[in-house]
Image 1 (spheres, one colour):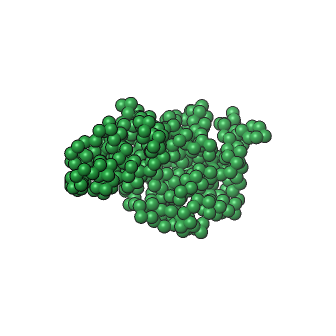
Image 2 (spheres, helix red, strand yellow):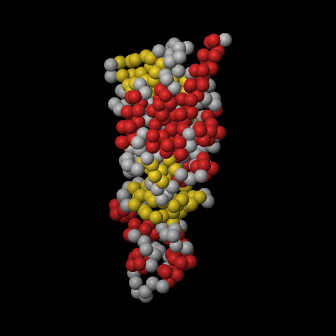
Image 3 (tube, helix red, strand yellow):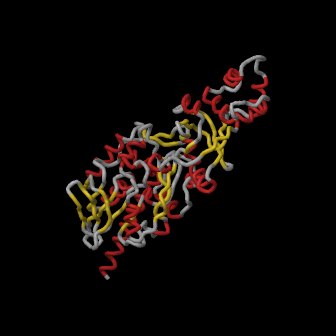
Length: 411
């Protein structure tokens, strides 16, 4: 092989762009292909409410957020940990800060300045970006094939990194169409499933009409022994939000196994049941239940409506029983929302299908990164960290493979 080689990166999200950066810094000629008119679209959407890059918690806790547990993913994150991502961001002129929740954000709180600086760096490194190229598999001689507005295009055989994402947010480019192409090439792929997703609930017409779109703030959700504090939002046909997403993997598995799942909503996690019982018991005689719940328990109207929903419109009479309901409102969840409404994707290429260099065992010279791999994590910075870390790991694996090939050819 020549010292400088032509490398294709397919997918212009964080994993693909970071792989391209690492490869170009090593002196190679890199072309990024993306099916959309511009790259980084999902990255920009992720930063719409403030770009949560990563998290500051201890590494052992951080790695514990990823499922399924795999040494390959753990090693990739250990090589490019949260501090490395923060340093990278700072190097682009976008310093970061740690929020009160431990989440890490750029000081600008936006994705667009970071993406602009990043694309400028890639341009300086000579990375070529080609858009409106949809990957549709391989030619008989192993070249990548793309559909374009001008017709099919074939790239000559050579090493490549695939970072095509999962199947969430298809309008931004990640539609999961690659699954069939890899399966046709002999790569086993686990079915893609929605992750970080809401679930359907059979709300009454009253609750649906009055409270769809209403947020639930400072609540806690409990399921199978795990309690998560955070926020959620009622939708017309269910519930979603950060607290739900944190439990979505175990809820999804329970729904698949049992046909449904019941989670418990604590409307006042900051108050012990005994304190809440005391407050409710001290309410003024003759005071309406709704007034008692508002003044003594601090419930918003949506909270009161949820109590009525759970109790079949007839609330418990005693203060202790009412407090117990407030601390554990049962919510029956049904199917997860469709994958195109999920934030991320579970399933994909199992780590057993790649070697320690992130190269596909069935397709030597082809490396994979990002959500194409079978891992999932909650929101909170873990998704982007995983994308960056695996993108870097795939690029470094490709560089190692190139060196091995050179040694083999020289001997």
